Image 1 (cartoon, rainbow, N blue to C red):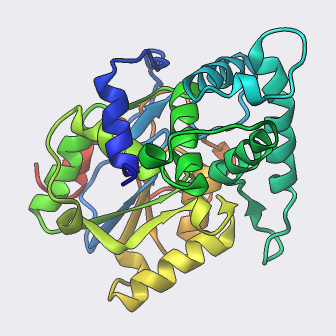
Image 2 (cartoon, rainbow, N blue to C red):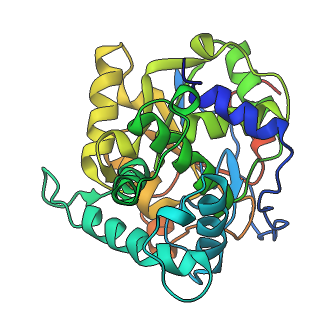
Length: 319
């Protein structure tokens, strides 16, 4: 029987592989505004840049410069023994793969959305499934008993590839903030750009920092939404509308939802337009997206400003 993605991630950890490191944070000058905020029943976290520190500060599939992409492709080719089944070009193995990767990414990025104004979000698993399918033209094979069918295999390849593309680590005090919210019966969820492996990536990073409450008790099932599920990314209005609709049906009013992110334009302003409360995390320069215009406008200005996740406790009147 094929291993699950969680089991596969643990298998990789046991091999003690070298993953990219997240650069040290560069502090920003900001004054926190952490006055207790009343009436919040659920917190929706952004992931990459907020709960997770990550290379570049946000989820990315096409880094600029492209050196991390070259390295990630090279490692993926060797990890899954793809070289002998590739259409080769002169030079290092990544050079024979990168055009296919970029072409499939571009093709999926051009798929029309159901709603005008929404932004297409390519699924990395689809990209790798297309690449792997082409490898079969030259008798490519893999261990189906371990990896599963082609889709399951593509999911594991996507996880391995992205783990080599972007380093991730839990932001300081992330687990403590989540524990504090759970202790006062504030439910939690995720509203973030990400892929099918993002929850696995998040939980593994957090558990290296501390012990989380049981996932089912901490996260509300109607409050977890990653962009890949709809094929659109922030600030697509449909992502925020669906989140509000789901949570309304579960008994949460928009004004009882707090969205925490380090990005105003793509995350907090659309959330506030849907009636949510918002908190900007200004913990470091990387990934921080702040607009003076949005800060001046009461319709878009975040309700709270955090400079450290430990301040979540104060916003909820815990300390």
